[in-house]
Length: 302
Ligand SMILES: NC(=O)c1ccc[n+]([C@@H]2O[C@H](COP(=O)([O-])OP(=O)(O)OC[C@H]3O[C@@H](n4cnc5c(N)ncnc54)[C@H](OP(=O)(O)O)[C@@H]3O)[C@@H](O)[C@H]2O)c1
Image (cartoon, rainbow, N blue to C red; front, side):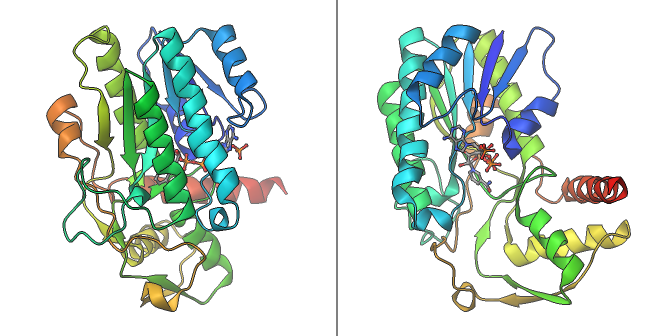
């Protein structure tokens, strides 16, 4: 089975690259030089060259704040780019797993969001991702849209990495404690995607309940909770630690407006695929350890 992954250098694609794959899988992760969502020609050439049986589209414009100033670019990548991928998948009869976000919701619901809840993004990034979902759903017969949230890993920029980096130079950090979501360890999501893809192949695409799914770490947290857990783990391995103070989002102005509640109800994924991601805390220790070790390795290289 040949699986094409877009966005090779991103957190999720790199986690897929490290995931334990079934023996008959051949995974080909393509970065921007080979497959650029802004250049439809590079997408079709990649399909022709690799002839995949499944596509996982992790590539996206992901800088939430910067997107406020670059909405058109975000839309071209996250909506038009996803649309091009979906078109080619449909033309070749290939299933598409497309990754989306909790930021399609406005955060006014009290309970966790279900897949069919009203969408109303509050940011340019959220609007571009929602438009991407719509393009995929309108174009492809066999699609899974996986909305995930608050990804962290030892790859690239993310909240856990930012906390540890800031702790090296700052005596204290203020962290928002009134926005709630589901922190998700990217390797856990990668394992979930591999398991889901396994079911898609096994059923030869026949009885798959295609559609939108929520897939995020179990349990919810505020950014402040995640920061606390990060430093608990960092302290245990002699990593950087600093003092943290909870603040309200209104005290931390940022270009993009983020939802106060973007918790996702993931029960549909459990019901239809028997899949559930681990609790968000479970792998922070591993993530912190890997970030710490990578840092030590880098600094000893210098
Ligand atoms: N990170 C989160 O907290 C979060 C939360 C909810 C949903 N999601 C979604 O989950 C997915 C994976 O996120 P992630 O954290 O793994 O993202 P990431 O680490 O920011 O990686 C995104 C990748 O997309 C690539 N990319 C950007 N523009 C591209 C283009 N025009 N053509 C091809 N590739 C392009 C980037 O390439 P370069 O390396 O060349 O820049 C980067 O490698 C995305 O769809 C994202 O929207 C993420």
